[in-house]
Image (tube, rainbow, N blue to C red):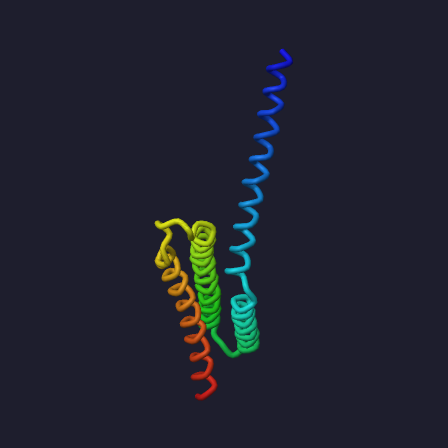
Length: 152
């Protein structure tokens, strides 16, 4: 009986130690992803966009007495669509970045192995670059609309 309880205790200790190691690796990976994907530059672009959209919402409220109900609803819908599309682009970018960062983390931990060559993360890097380009292009289009409106 003592032998069985000793074996169970050793198994339990080994399982807990193994679980702690897995949790530590998962924490390191999560930390690496956070550093790679959620830098101030993206947050700055998002806060700039939110400021821009808040200003447009305020303008729309100011213009409400001059607009028909139909025009107001159309403009309000367009602004909401811009915000929704921005959120979708941001979510797409975050997902692509996390996949790329996870790939880089695996590559860094296993770079001495032959199968992990330099092009290992090329696909996820491409997806990440495309998602960022979409965000920047969309934001540039919105700014261009603002410039055209001011020029008129």
